[in-house]
Amino acid sequence: MKVQRFQLDMHFQILTHWLEQRKCYIPPRDEVPGIGFIAYAGSTPISVGFLRLVEGGFAQIDGLTTNPEAPAQFRDRANDLIAESLISKAKSMNLKAIIASSTDKHTVLRAEKYGFALMPHTLFALNLNDFNKVERNN
Image 1 (cartoon, one colour):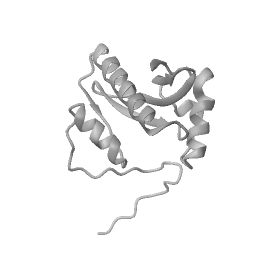
Image 2 (cartoon, one colour; image 1 turned 45 degrees about the vertical axis):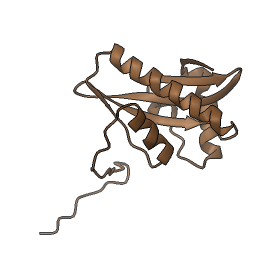
Image 3 (spheres, one colour; image 1 turned 90 degrees about the vertical axis):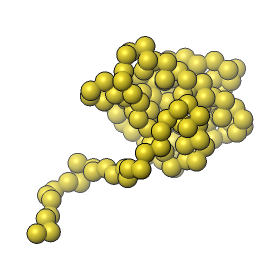
Image 4 (cartoon, helix red, strand yellow; image 1 turned 60 degrees about the vertical axis):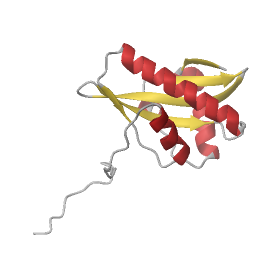
């Protein structure tokens, strides 16, 4: 397998196709992080992943997505290569730490394998497009 930099013009269609097949949110092009990698087995794309920069010298692994038609062992190996590439890139940028989140048990096991600490926090998000006002209970 080989890994190369994710290039939006060249690889965006691959990403959106996989997300459509998985019935996942398809981000507009301007939401795709600028730092990303794609893994291939021969000429077949297998996995992509991104590093989203956060203030304070941190980054978030984001958008780890695999080709749903690829064999499980290919997806597993490709995800390892993507994780290693993202970690190496973050280190080369002298970042302090990487955060990540996932509901996928295999991704959580992979994170532990690479030394990520599981945190007892609850993740939540606010879609600002739907935000009108905050109602206070006092």
